[in-house]
Image (tube, rainbow, N blue to C red):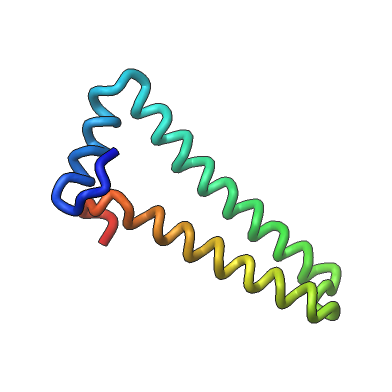
Length: 86
């Protein structure tokens, strides 16, 4: 992977096309990230169902962690500097 703005997208495309099983690694990574967010939202739903929001300190820490995870996911999304990243 090249972190340069002008060649980041082509670097990811090279890994996906030319590296053996590069397409598989990238798809497992992308689907794993989606599964991670599904688990997070299920966890939030469970917390809402059982009334965990009454524990405000714990709930607020969870909200902060959710925002940090969302920011990290966004940074990972724009990392390739490709057409879909914008």
